[in-house]
Image (cartoon, rainbow, N blue to C red; front, side):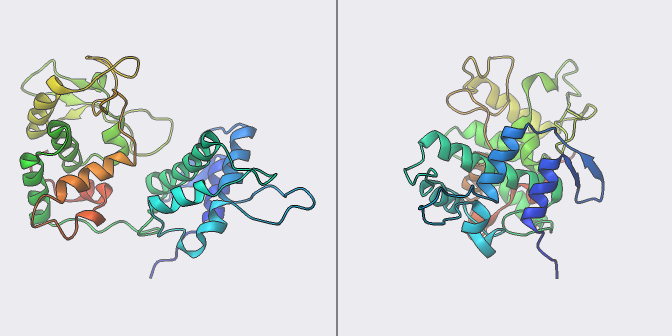
Length: 282
């Protein structure tokens, strides 16, 4: 039986710029400025002391979520952010609440990418999909008729090809090399948050190339976030790159359209899909 990691210890090591990844590799992470360390610590672990006369109230995320720290939902984060107040008891501004919620999401992104801990299965790799489930997900992507179907199909195909969520949403057009149409390659974003930006060029599975070719003519690029030849591959209607909240929702929406996956769609983890047997050659 696995032991859930101590969130406060993870946070302190992360903000200190030194932690150990899930594979046991020590990492010298980013250098944090004092203001950011204070903001993240405040939002997640330790609220400043209230002035005299004010009722004691710990608004930090860890105190709010308690023993559900590894079983939270997006609704939990929204509910927590909505109730935040300033030290004088007045309602916190929308921008301040958004920054606090962003700090919480960034912490869990770090836990998932660097430590292998997710909100549903702490310190343990998510359950992989069977070959039948992977084939069903590919079929669902091919037949998807929801919003922006070409984008949804490519997002699923990238995941089926083994790209983890951070790699899929971080993939830029300039990292795709099409000089040799018979053997296109891509330089994928690194799988961890170390200083290495991209890995060596590797072949793109042909089914992914075809899905990419179907998507690019309808890609909704818009300056200043993206252009026809630059920016993230997967973009929103406003031309911005997809985020880590939207991406899994998109994958699950596609999966929910297939009868073989309907019951499991809501619990699908893109990272688990990426680690499962690909339904096409790599």
